[in-house]
Image 1 (cartoon, rainbow, N blue to C red):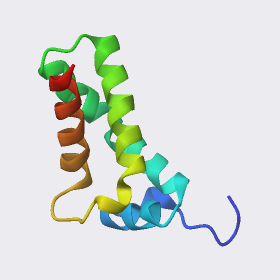
Image 2 (image 1 turned 30 degrees about the vertical axis):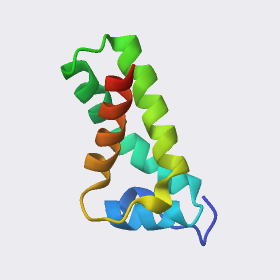
Image 3 (image 1 turned 90 degrees about the vertical axis):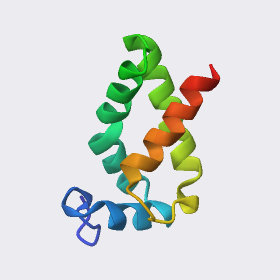
Image 4 (image 1 turned 135 degrees about the vertical axis):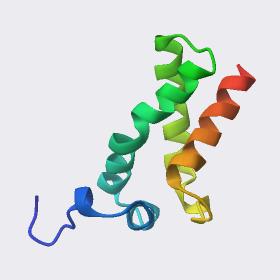
Length: 92
């Protein structure tokens, strides 16, 4: 890790979202690392088989990455991305 890069693993969710919104892909990667399994778990609870839960979670995380600047911090990032995933699953 370069000397002036922030250690994203030590940041809180709101700070990670702010960094990701500024274009820090590694910050978004840390959000995915933290919340990806919870998104898949939600989808499994909604009835998705493992492979489908993985695919929908990937799609939802990609959508969240593309729309991260829309995240206003009025709730948690986890809740926001789970909402995206749930809507995508229900549309299938």
